[in-house]
Length: 249
Image (cartoon, rainbow, N blue to C red):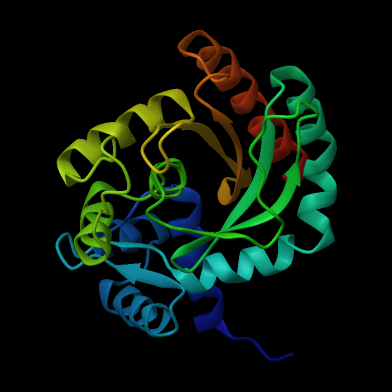
């Protein structure tokens, strides 16, 4: 029987980076897997060349790359993710009386996979397939929150933080302060930062510890009052957790 030890080691390295939920250096990986640094470096170089991991230009540490994001979403998207998530989203809409969206990151855009509309006449809606820029506030904060600060800083220096409205966060240091809040609370918040008159909340969905999508609520400021935001945030975090638990079974 043919044995491929290098492939096994490469998969161990990839699994360690994914499960750590943070960027790792060569020495950390070598120590954790009891491999030589030269072996780890060679594996990392191959994984980086194929886009499965990315290396920070500043910290020289490694994190999950775009190709792995694409692969995971290919596995979960289609009918699988939406079928699992839909009943949870329908319940969420009943609880908060606002439109809910299931979204996933595709390169530097956010794609709407499913939309569950509230029954009230004045509501926000986007068709399935709609794409938002990755820098759209509520999605940007949510999807970048799983990266290390150095990776976020490098990404935003390259992409920029557009000024969509007078409330938009355009300073990277201030954005990183917002990221701290996301990590602490489990949800991101947009207070008219992408569109005036619209407030949004989003929380990430995980499959076995790996972020694959987000559940979000968008509503007009007249409906999404300061008092209501706290209630919606609680329900959206619980919904994202329930979907994550179901995906991870």
